[in-house]
Length: 586
Image (cartoon, rainbow, N blue to C red; front, side):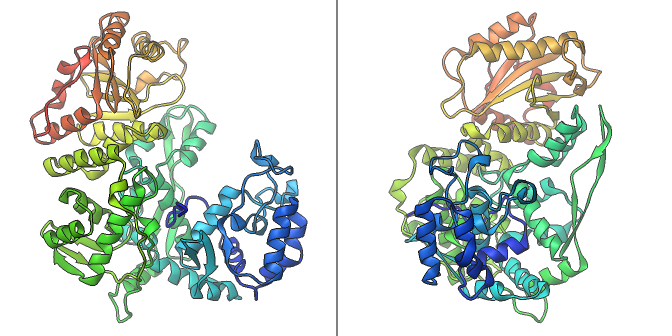
């Protein structure tokens, strides 16, 4: 079985291109005829691919494989393209969507990544059906109607209905109906399985501070467009679709910048009157019946070695609730155990909260579970529990303990996973800074560019220079990273723009005494002789003290602050050039 991710879309936004993608499956459409009559011949140079696709369209076939539709990134010799500019057209979707530079470059095809995005979008809106066992696709009845829509008004009406059946778009409408305006970070915080890899969201406050300190127009542009969590990106895309349909409005914002004066900020989104009316109808708050939600097994997790198991567990929760929309939480846990899911009840509750976060109206108080939406039937492939990743099982068990024994928001407990994902370094930086700000109650900023530490945490009386490392196998002594930390410390001690023109140290309050700065490494866990690195860093920095926090101790410290058992102003006392131990999880 191919392992496709569906339900979550990062890139496509053009309705006309989406309609052409759906028309690939409709032999009666003008676009199908264009593909058959000249597009394949003109824009697919590789003979074998051209012949295969041409034969299928000549026979009016309507079921196509993933690679028929998405293709690969290959050059004109059939080899893997070394860069995107060398890639030639190799699939039906690629030659259905002209590249953005078609007018100047003559490249009338898109890349395989964009093609995958459009296919994923068509499937997620139930215009195209995914035949999982064959890794193939065909048009749905709703897709046929969309394909044959002749006017923009008719097309947009079908799109509106499809989006109201797509849970993430109703989630965005509901979030905006509760509070408008919101930017992509504020919406992203409330969208998806909060915080887990694949659904990360950055703090609006942290990002605003980050943009406030951008040193150039190019950096400001990059922060606005490129620095975002995955849920933030999903929220931005969905709000953009809804805006085109008149259900959401958006406006630009301005903010002050240390170096540039005034710069463009992050766009704000608000629900419109029509959007408010439509979402209430879709949820059954009028004489109109609730619109059934369309989901697939693939919607329920996007990444991670254990994602198939997690998808099946969450899908099974929903299927059980579809049969009995109100039931006791304990009976749900028992029914899951009878089906091979022996996860801690805290994990099950967190899954329910996450299902609500993706736009399925379901809730629990730990005693009773209620499903308020009607869900279209969907299937769950057979994935056996014994195939679980053992590291993931252990980590989930630890996560369940934190969920049960602390009051930390689940999105921060997901740091237990993110800290081990080496590809999630930026997520780890951002969310760690937010954790120090929101849970420890410290001032915090994310810096994280060249010649800057990842983050700073501070009060008016002390400051901490922070370096974060997301490592799957732990963080061991490293002389290069010790050198880097010493440079940051010396930057802050000398404070000369001639030494470092970005002057990142100005983010610290001026009231902090010179002798009350500290350094800190944060990682999954620390191995080997790491305390030697702490002592050596201190010696090279004129005796400044620091520490190291593994991810569990970071969370435990935050929980102790919440409980009033650790005062934020006492944190410098723990900076003794050792791996910090705040306590155990009780």
